[in-house]
Image (cartoon, rainbow, N blue to C red; front, side, top):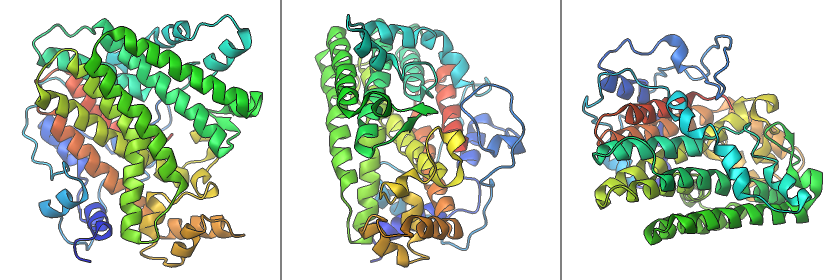
Length: 417
């Protein structure tokens, strides 16, 4: 079908002969020499010095695919458009998001632990287990930067409002609670480089710990005292549950399968970022169009983040990821690289439908993906979502925080864990 989701996704992700996102970022910088060879390589979330790495995905991959048309992009995603960003970027160099957000996040985990205070020692230890500062903290970083950018755009001081900082905490609490529950569902024994809660204390206590973290997050949300914000963030919990149910199923039709995959990706990952960004904008601005800018940035960055995560399952080792490699295949999940690889290796269709349950399925699927262009296709798809995030956030008034959110899209694409 000429208008099918599958063909749109394939053409969408392969129809480029240039670096896409990096060209977009140059239009903000106003200089073609902004990116060094090293800047397109994989980036660790750690700020510690590291050896230079050879880029896993080159900035240019020549393709015989057709040029991308705006109609194709819109058919894939209602808001996704080919980038036509104007050079509205401030004169300052693109800021490091971690440095800018550091002041507001210094005591984040300590404040979360205060929210989780309980008299029972064991429950408190379970709840504190993942709030050890070893996570990426990407969600609160995005929320803090978006809040500051929105404050400046709304002609206020850049400092965070108390409610905005609480939303940053809530975003990390909801995310962590979902990880605790995911590990129970997936029977995972490792998370962030250490034993999972369910592996240490058992499934029952892990479920209760996740529930308690969620309850503490909802209490913090209620204290903000804004019914619109409560309504917006309530969508996140619903989406997480719906996304988990979607992950339990599959689609026989390959076009429906890719649409199902992207919708599940939004609900399980991007919804939290999108609604958190929207919530902090609501606290300082009454314009629905401004709220939509915040929402669309979070949504597109969130989808790109998960697409890259799905790529890393095939390209990074267990030590880098902090969890076993090929984890998705072992759970019976067909992610972007597998779905794209199906076009070159039709044998994968039967494996997907039986959720890689037959002997040798995981190993064969792994090899098919690595022999195909599925990894590259998924990476390009992630780039286009990041381009849309840049297009959206560029509509705000220039500020260091807005620039940092633009810079963050590059980090999302080039991370190695």
